[in-house]
Length: 144
Image (cartoon, rainbow, N blue to C red; front, side, top):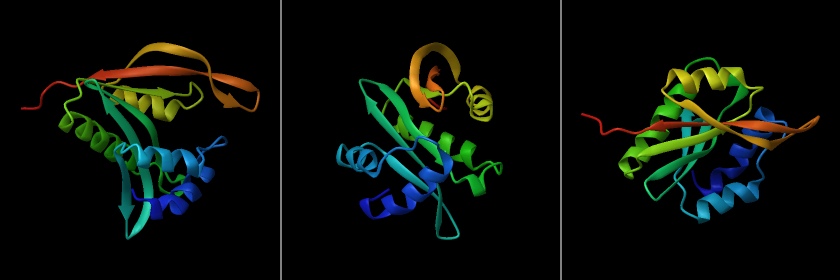
């Protein structure tokens, strides 16, 4: 992802989430040199992911597939790519937060080897106030 991609990323972000990241958050991630990747199809951005890696730990900060492109395995492909990036940067584990109200994402994360390790109370904004986050993690063992 580059600065010039942020308008297209924001178009997806605002369609996908009722409480989207701002363009400033994406710019801050790019300025901090967080690995930020796009998933392309036919020359169009259909997804993106942002991770941070430090102290042998990776954290998926944002992973999103355009609502029009969901349910075709793109989220799984992007998630696997982010995990590979974390491994190449010597991360030993990877974390993420997910809304309990997002069962499709939770199922994907469990299917890919993540486990629930805790909750963050009132982590996400919601239309009814605040929503907890499920904290998930996966150990990253060396690949053969």
